[in-house]
Image (cartoon, rainbow, N blue to C red; front, side, top):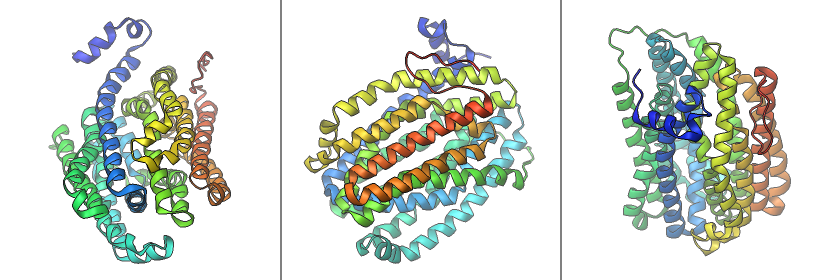
Length: 451
């Protein structure tokens, strides 16, 4: 098979060529494509947050983040955990040339998710006034929430098609659909209409972006697949057996990330919500290397597990964890030592979130050092263990949120998120060791044992 230019270039770099096998070379070259795009997407998302904060202040940003949280929950329900299932089986089917399986799992996930997403969208649209009043005691949220409810189905399609393209190793297309296109269009639209229409303009910007990217995702999938004459074959029972545990995982992960924001919306001010929302979005940039590597590592894990090559799986996972940690460490250091300056870019009132940014960044740092343990469990068919690891994090998150947020506000929310994220990855690392007999967690100056 003829290698692409980037693949050949990676092999010629001494530090890579002498130490990395073919699996890691493929991950490095694929991750390089994803990383270059994700850097652009992260920069655009950062710009969106800056424009949002400077146009509407901490309070207006808080309204937007609360509405976005509700709609993100709706899209999560609409996906039904099928995005992870789609990635797993598209990757596994494609590597052995079973296009009937690939077509079958794609058709079923799109049908199921579309039906559920539309239903959830309708429910949130008509109950928006009640959610705004009885949950947040903020009737003004109803109108933007109704508009944002229209984004639930296209947002679910963006996630599904991004994962499907990732399963085919179309990393550029996958990252474009989910990581670049949405923030790019959102920034342009917000710049054009945000000043005139306020928070509602920000909502419309996001709605326009996810609708455009949903159509692009469908187009790219059809362009990349050749299903003419292929009979779709995939059992619904098999799909749901994989997706239901993943739905549970997704719901619990949403609790870990969303419960502190929700409780701030209930017990604190919209300004506190806005500050915490911005700090959370900045801190997630620590994981940009992890997300880039996962783009190509996840389908590789599925391939190697299906082929029974456990030694290659362990070596690749450990190599990826080391690579991720070394490249992400400088970002973590910058966020910890220059947090006040970074938060000040959003406006003077956001500097109050500097300590929260430090805490959240450290929590994401643990996520980075753990490597791709979550994907290792999912791609090896151990979705139930992934669910247990997230379940432990949820319990910790709930306890800490209830204890700390009423007393410490934004700082309490940051501690709850950071500790629960760290706990989730430590537990998942333990399960990877017990189930797959592999040590992946990277600690500098400590060599991980092979098995």
